[in-house]
Image (cartoon, rainbow, N blue to C red; front, side, top):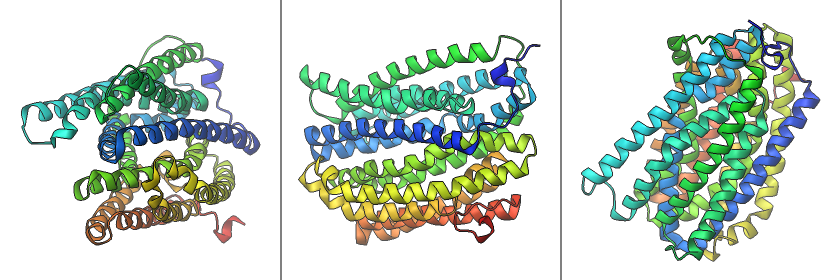
Length: 443
């Protein structure tokens, strides 16, 4: 069978300069997307008020968390399997993986959405009345979100990083803002249900564009042919990776979820505003991972230890410097940016400072998660991540009643830094790969 040149080329490429340019492009798109998202969030906060915005924040967090979980790790594992199949020319396995992952993501998303909607409708009092309508609309968003998450993973695995991130993080966010403005102009009430409905429209349109472009490019590099289905092998690797991603999402969302149970919606809204700014910082890690994770998998498939060490050494330092610079810039601009949400949201500045410190601490330990998940130690990575997430939730439950939102921020910051430290130790002990940016052996 003839292998498409773009898919079957097993050479390690490009050099670190090329990777830096790719990561900068990814970061630029994510920053632009964050600008759209931030504008939309600030607009909704001002128009809906603190209570409705807090309800929307809680509903959106649950939608995103369950949407990521619906892929069962197949979105993230695509960056492990597809680059390896590309390196070895196993196109039948690649075709099977692509189709299998799409079916699982859409099917599981639909099942979770149906179960959640059934609980809201059939179990009176299961959720507070103000949350009912937004949750029912969010049930329609969930399977679409899951499929788009999988499309993102496929594009990342093919090194099509802009195709991976522009539709969900730039187009979707822009459409949310446009839809919200249009809905309010047409007389829709400024409520959480309206905001979730706008998210549904934006997600559907962005997914349609991304799926069409992705299918077209895949047909060019992966001609039609036989499909192989070793689904047990895929799931054995994908499920631990999925747990890692779900737990990673938990690090981003657990604080908001815990606050939703313990505090009033207004407090949740203030904290959520701080996390919307924090996403600018998280994009540094995302940009680096989007470019390097597939290449770590390729290096493993080709047994290129020298190339792997060089890649990790370069990116651990670069990511730390970029995270530190972005964090400082974010704190400098935060009084103005938080003020866009409303006067009361400036109280989130100390929370943001705590969260930034935690992410800078995590960045100092390098790309240990990518090393573990791409080179076969995903179960160890999952175990560490879940253990630290559990520790974080327990700490929040202890600190939030006394310290409020500050307790949530302290718990989240400590947990993310601790996870980075433990993953770096695991990468060195299990795989012999040194990931911290400050390690003397990287000099």
